[in-house]
Length: 216
Length: 221
Image (cartoon, rainbow over all chains, first blue to last red; front, side, top):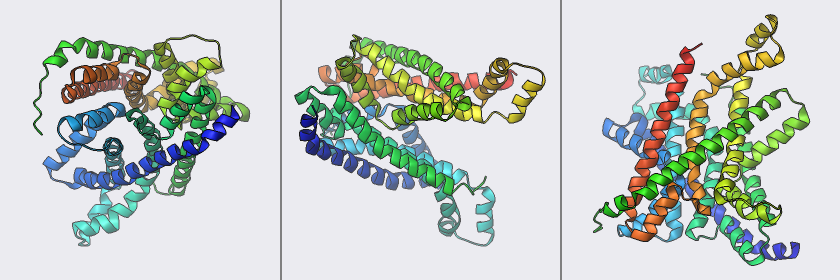
């Protein structure tokens, strides 16, 4: 049994690398998209605010699995052909973007109104207010939940196995298909996911403590 | 982009979706009910236990929370029967998995609620001569409920959405129904639009109902 698993390790490592690659892409892309949409939600004119609100509430209201199938099977139906890898990344990114939007909104809302009024009173422009007053403070509120949410991206990436993409989850299933050693391999997989995510949530807790001096 | 929406085939097979939604709700309700029991018992135990028990409970919570649900579903359905002599259906297997999964999330919710109960309330309970058990039932748990309800509502909605993972072991819930229609009729965009609306509406109805409970709990003291 151990010999078979040892033999499969390089294959599992490839799957694990893909899991990390998908997660990294999703985290980076959703951070960019989420911050842009989040600023639109907080400071944008009404139509943009409504559009972002509807986007975020719809995406967060459905299971991520439904979103993955919708994007994967739906896009080719309307004539958009993406590789399954990119369809999966797109679906996961949409989901994560909606979360980032909410983290950003929450972080900005937690900054007392007086800060922005004081900045206005000393004559800072809108951009200066954001860059020098609001964002540096909101950033500390944004960071811990966001890092915690990175674990969701890693966990969510396991669903791309359903599209036939050989991530860690799919690699484990394929090795089981050949060796019939279901339990040891699932436990090994669980431990790998656990190690990555536990490290991330540990980092998030450390940061939260580091920023605990900020009060409401 | 020449795609014409045609919902006829969706309505013809709508029983798959409606039945699926009812099964999703059933899976969620049973799993959450078991999860609440696990969560309450372990949370109450945790706050009064020694280091060893705390460590074990924390290990359970951290393990479940850091592993993808789909892997746990596979592990219980495909993995566990190879090492223990048990026979169970996919549905039972999923309920057991989601119950353990929701239990881990609910321990966290209840634990932080219990720790937020003001010390003075417990002292007051002690002062009027309540036994530890009475203090738990009449003072700690009701106060904890009021504190945790908003977080609890969010956890419930998110667990309801997690029932979609049951489709990977062919439990015919809503997402499975959607895939069935997807593969058999190819009305792909239509079916996922309808299913999106069904999940959203159910989610909002649940949220509304839970908000009513929250309000009722706030006023009825």
